[in-house]
Amino acid sequence: MDPKPQEKEVLLKKELSLETFLFPVVFTAFFALFVTRMGLANTLNTMMKTAYQLLLDTVLYITAVCVIMGALSALLSEFGFVSLANRLLQPLMRPVYGLPGAAALGVVTTFLSDNPAILALADDRHFRRYFKAYQFPALTNLGTAFGMGLIVCTYMYSLSPAMGTPLGVPVLIGLAGAVAGSVVSTRLMLIFTRRAFGDEPLGAHEGTASPLPPGMRPIREGGFGSRMIAAVLDGGHTGVKMGLSIIPGVLVICTLVMMLINGPAEGGIYTGKAYEGIMLLPRLADKIDFILKPLFGFSSPEAIGVPVTALGTAGAAISMTANLISRGLVSPGDIAVFTALCMCWSGYLSTHASMMDSLNCKHLIGKAILCHTIGGLCAGVAAHWLCVFLSIAG
Image (cartoon, rainbow, N blue to C red; front, side, top):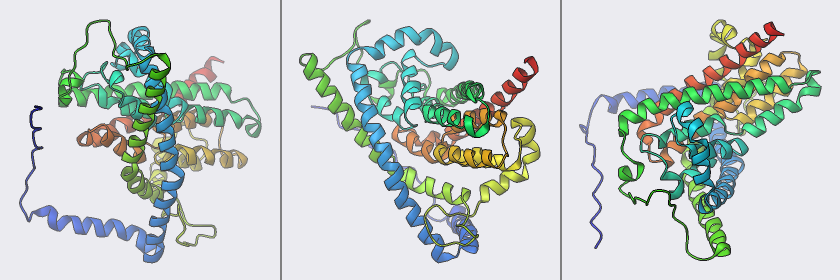
């Protein structure tokens, strides 16, 4: 008979404490930021409609990504590609990122799709066996740094005709900056996770350790065809679970981020439609433009809107670039910085919480966001100064 699972320890606090009276004040003040500008009815309508549009446009898309990538990752694991990647890339991934070689698959899957694609990969038990407990949560930071990379790079390069000059080199510089940011973000995260989990194996931490003979890997039952079908179905099923698990984080957090970033409808009038907001984050960023200019070298104050928007969604951020180009407000150097920031951050404020929750690491959400904020800033700075050095050398 299986041993009875231990009940999770319940944390206790006094029934009435300072936070009991402080929270209503903070919540009311935060809610008043929107109501005073948008009106109560418009605030509530925008909040609900934004969440509904996110459910249709974002969550279902992410679920589809998770299903496809879950099936693909299961196939790669079943037929030994994960083991091969671990062997080949171990000399690169461990000294650079402090992760096993198998983590490189997370880079590939998120680069080709989006941040949550790494969740389906991370849920594969054959993939997980390469990691120690402290290394596993850092996959969130590693995967997010490359999320939507192919889309971001392709879109930025497609703007070459509008810019009037080839943007291949700026895009490659931006990609290099994103790689630098990913190293910073992942390495910082490993410092916190090692303190939290120590050096124990991942399976031991989860209570599901199943040691394997050296040089061996587990497979499913049956022949080649049946194993392939079983892997695809199992991986797809895992993707469905991952897609469902991120719904709360995406709808709640991303709705708030969008309302803090976006502005009113045309004419400055609030109508209660989806994706309207109070533009608080762009205004705050404008106040520190004297700091951002030397770090990122933006050609105009309006350029700050791209990385600020990338905090919530990379798709919306890159779509702003064409408008800035048409108005003559950005340079090729800005494109490099945009590529680095949009790729490295890629909407992490709206996905990090749900991704860490899916990895059962809710207590590390704040640290993951802090590390990735620093990593993204390093990505933008690296891209800017790479452009400066290349222009001097040229």
